[in-house]
Image (tube, rainbow, N blue to C red; front, side, top):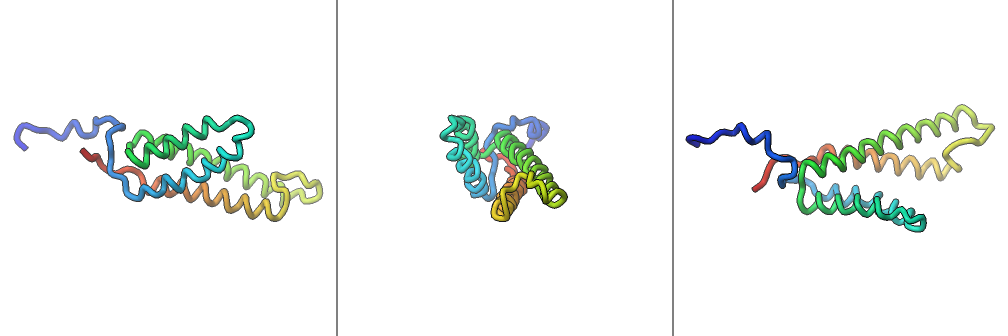
Length: 137
């Protein structure tokens, strides 16, 4: 190790390939995006979801910190948004039961929404726990 320095390691680009434990999380995270893409197919909004699915495939086969940051930020922001909307609608349902103005159509809609919000939050937590660790050459 004579004449070499490790000072350059923190300055390496975030696009270098990294070791990735538990790559299965990207397949699981791509499933809600794929379902959303299929639901939005008739409205012509498939292209944004297709680009997200491509990012999941890139991260699965060539894990980088940059793509992980994009995917984690999207799932984190989505989790916060869904949690806010879920609790807002739940609060409206509890407080104002006579008007029927709520985001939930009924008991089954509440159950399905609860499962989907829990899935999105669990995936965001899983993405955080399964972040790329160290560089591979």
